[in-house]
Length: 260
Image (cartoon, rainbow, N blue to C red; front, side):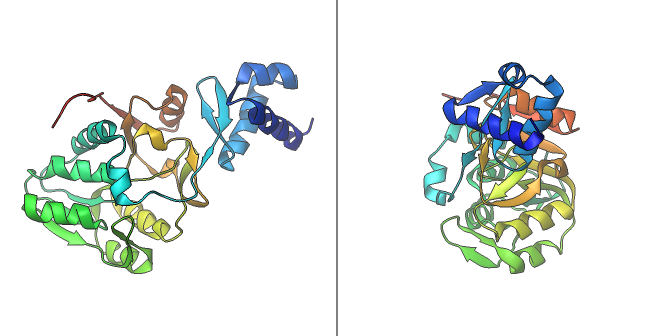
């Protein structure tokens, strides 16, 4: 078989089963382990599949992001744990960017007591919370208002964010794989990209339920991040793949059952 035929065969196998092992594909295709890995990489780069430990599965499609209020009620323990772990990276006197999202709201709650912070965000909820619970120097990007997500996106927002030099840019996402971040909204791309470009350190902050989902628009490759902060629910193979790329992986402890 030529590569395109092998890749189509892999997709056909996944149409029948949720997960197919690499060993099974090696046996059924009659090719080497490395050949199967390369075929999977091609499919993963195209957003068709997601690697898991010892195998592969079809990527989940994210057609539309949930509104802020719905997201705020989901996976609350994992988000709190991930937010707390990410907050450990913040030191007094830093200039940081907080991307829009409920996990980064948890991070904001953890850093309210830091001294001398400058915080820049495109998220209205984060901005409102920090304005009443901290004495940080606080900027909001402004820009095109995305009502459901309670944030600003698009060119005007990204132009405002480009005025700053960040020690750390904390970036959120609702869909990512080891290939990269994606979004149903094209307008989110410029905001995330400019924050990463202007930062000394870029940190992806996402609970493990977001991993393996793919949306219509590619936003950023994972390789732009220095660090990924997630929880222990992330697939071990994915965590290893990130480390192989030279990315630090921070796994937040399980806080289930605890209360802040």
